[in-house]
Length: 78
Image (cartoon, rainbow, N blue to C red; front, side, top):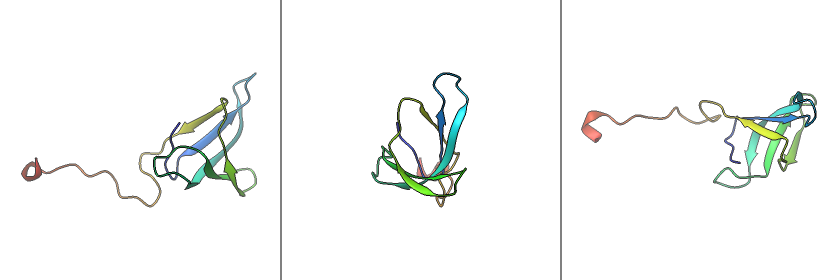
């Protein structure tokens, strides 16, 4: 499991599959995006160190927070 800043963490209830809690990844402890993560939970607006379990999934954002959009090479650079 790998996340980027700005991705959404969703923790589902294993029996029903409905969302139990969600939040935004606001801090990474490893450069490669592996856990644990600092997550700002939407229900409390608090930031907690989070170790994802098997009931966790990540909704990736198109562009990590604070990062420039991916750049494509120009014909001269290829």
